[in-house]
Every structure is written in C-alpha cells, then in structure tokens.
Figure 1 (spheres, rainbow, N blue to C red):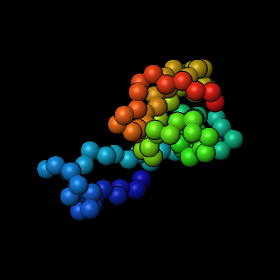
Figure 2: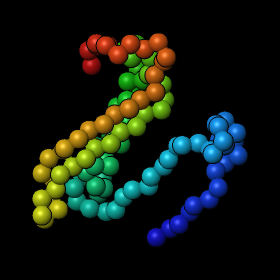
Figure 3: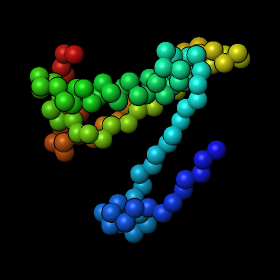
Figure 4: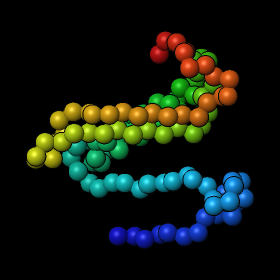
Amino acid sequence: MLNAIHSQSPDIAMGVDKGGAGDQGLMFGYACDQTPELMPMPIMYAHKLVKIMADIRKAQNGLMPYLRPDAKSQVTVEYDDNNKPLRIDTIVVSTQHDADAKQNKSGKM
C-alpha cells in the first residue's frame, strides 16, 4: 500500500476560504476479468461516462455548449456471492456548467 498524504498545495489553498479546498481524489483499481481493460466494472463505466461528457463538451455541433470541464461520475454495481456483477444499481453524473444553464434541456445525441 502506498501512503502519499501531504499538505494541500498553496496554490489551491489560496483560492478558497480558511480550511483549504474540499476537492478530493480517489485512486482505485485492481486487475480482474470484469472488463476488457482488466479493471473493476464500476470504475470503467464511471470513466466511460466522464469521457462521453468530455466528448459532448468538446463537440463542434453545439449540443451542450453550456458544459464546463469539471465532471464526476459514480457507478454502483450489485454483485452476487461469487463476485459476479448482477446489475447496475445506481449511476450518478455531475458536471460543471454555465451559471445561466437551464435545468430543462433537450437535444439529440
């Protein structure tokens, strides 16, 4: 196990109120046969979702011009007793957006 905890970067800390930034990071992974990438299914699906968000944000067709770079996703998978995936239980996607973006948006993918 690698323990790499250190103090917050002064550059980040000066941009927020007392106590530092609330940003967090997570390193996750181990080799398994759940996906072609040999990573656990939840993290691979989460990575694919934020990749799609980035592709949509960068698209030249103007599909969602209000999206901004900070996107996060979480995928929760239910497993059986043999550690085989049964179903996707929950998907959460969050993205930064322009302040004037409306909640009701429609568009074709």
